[in-house]
Amino acid sequence: MSTPQASASADSPTSSAQPGAAIFSANLAPPTPPRRINPWRMFLGAFVPNWLLLRTEVSPGAKLCYARLAQFSGQANDCHPKQETLAAELAVSARTANDYLRELRRHRLLEWERLGLGRANRYFFLDHPWIHEGPALRAASGPTSQEISDQQPQTSSAPIEEENQGRESDKGGTHTTASRAPLIPSSEEEAVKSAALDGVPADFARAAFNRLEGVGWKDGCGRAVRNWRAYLKARWAREQAERAERAARPPGSRRAAPNSALKTVHPEQFTGTVGKL
Image (tube, rainbow, N blue to C red):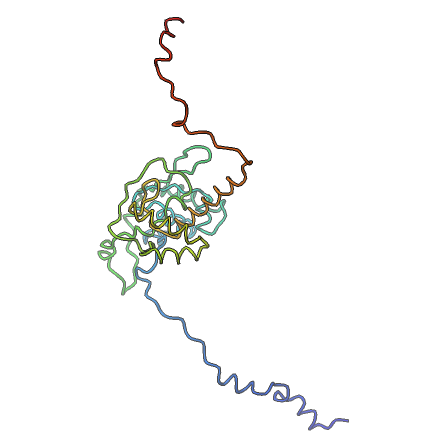
């Protein structure tokens, strides 16, 4: 039969604790607090205008949709993302993204044109009384409305049309950049390092970097490339698709010869043909 003293010692916390646990917890360093940052001009992204933030008639999702479309539009005011792309950028379903678009159109903030079956719509932003009557929304220590109007537009935040807008352009742009964009590597070594983060081979990255350096950082349609990683991922995905297509062809099959390789027919071969008809 156990005595009360033995029972008490068996139930005490110290008897079940591992040796040295109290010393370890006492010497454990507290977690390092996160570093404080200043978000002023730090991020590239889609920003909701202050006049739209204040409108209780518009849902938060539709406001974010407006901001993302404005980023797609960019300085050229050319907005034509696919709905699947827009939905992915907003982290919602395609049906929800379509609801946001209809809501913006219902409030007469947006309209679009259908360009045909299988092609993305082209979106247009509309002037609205809300834009002119909405007060500036800023913190007491923030910039004044004059300072906000004096800021340079962050054109580098606009995505490249080749990847994000997801359709072929039917016209070539003439964008020019006075300086290298923040998302463009400054050297071939930096370009290769960033390409490795996305699993793109170094030789492919070097060739793409040197080609863009030679043409002033413009893509095949003459549009300015402002995001190296996004551009390279799109190029590498297309290259992989073409390689898979070539590998899937039957052995010995050849593509049709281009028009320039066809036999040339001279007009003198048909001399007198009209007269015989």
